[in-house]
Length: 105
Image (cartoon, rainbow, N blue to C red; front, side, top):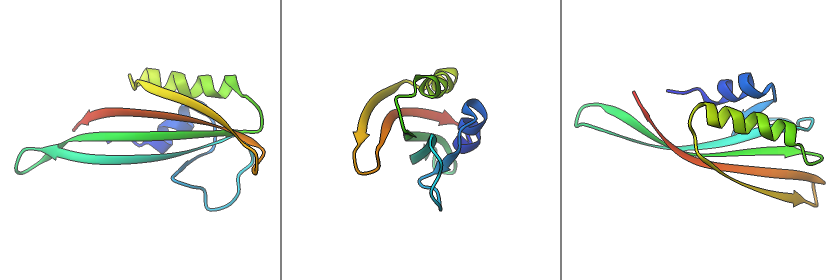
């Protein structure tokens, strides 16, 4: 099964956390949530469906690092949707990438 945290760290060279960091991070950074469902025959779960949300946080619009994430998704053939918002209380931008993909074991 794909180690999403390690893959994103390697491809982007950004700090990455599964769900959340345990202490505040210096911007920019990435957090992701991977909801999975497994399927297969009666005896083996050989198909994993991923519903992946990747959140990128930065103090400014950061097309360079967003591009690294997009290239990482494209390299794995993960089709994604992207939305961006300003978080006024935190004074940072959040770019949210959502995607679904199936992995066969």
